[in-house]
Length: 398
Image 1 (spheres, one colour):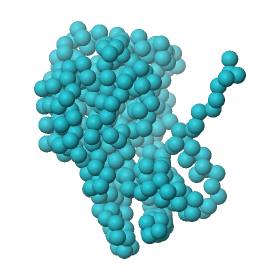
Image 2: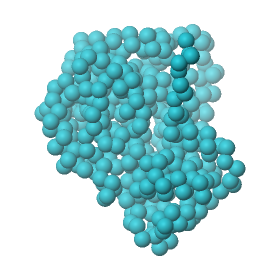
Image 3: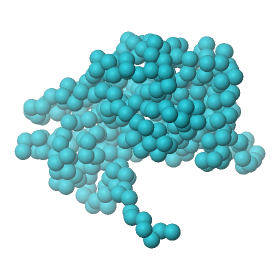
């Protein structure tokens, strides 16, 4: 069976995790993996999650299978969180939400759904996009293309080029969008630009596929769902893959959801039946703990308010780190302009370094990030930021 196989190179992020863990340097910094960290470098559990887990453990009565849809209360709450309680699509029974193992699971289920619904469908994604998109969708048999998105010279959005490319898409095409906190570049369309994109999707007839992995980390929960709600308002069909890993700090629980908006209730039910079919063939039954905990939080006024407060603290800390980092780099006398760091949002920013400069940071200073120079801003703190800026100055000088 295995006599002819060869080892596959490790995922760049996973390889960095291993290299960082093995490095004995006391000054080492991990800027690669996309998790939130506090001032002490920890990824703490949210207090609202701890309280909800106590309630769940005290009240659960069985560990039997959930069935393909997952936790019903979680699905209902996630649909309303994404689209709003007053969503017309929800009131018309055109929305179906199904729990998945993380946002990545939701994306894979979305790919499988599209392959069944329209086998010849092709997907367009931003250039750049999350690296796993480039493996996940082709892995499901979908052909992928890219559309212009990020201008590396100005560290800004190539909006006009993006629109020009999307004007070539039509009915039967699928276009992937990052709802907020773009991974890896940290650049998102402005609200009026999202309006233009949604109107174009309606006009051209392509299907928006929205990846929303960082809801609440850009401007706020309601604000970060703007793109999703605009697509729901303008387009008859929308696919949304959401994750609760970051905004509930429940990374290892693998909590996500796929939400489908269809033309009518009959097509929504048909789409849901296909989702149940593909998940049955993939992982059979979904996990229970994480979604049950979030179900409790989102249906408790007190715990939901606490979650929103804790999420705001994480968002404000990241935005504060962006401001401080940009200011300190300028104050250090580094000639290159890094003010874009403050203008961008979410955990990630491209630093605009060469592969050689990234390797020098790693080899000479034990500062670990991927070769694209994407850094996780949330990994900075008062004890490591100055060291990073000093190292940055060295690799930029030579």
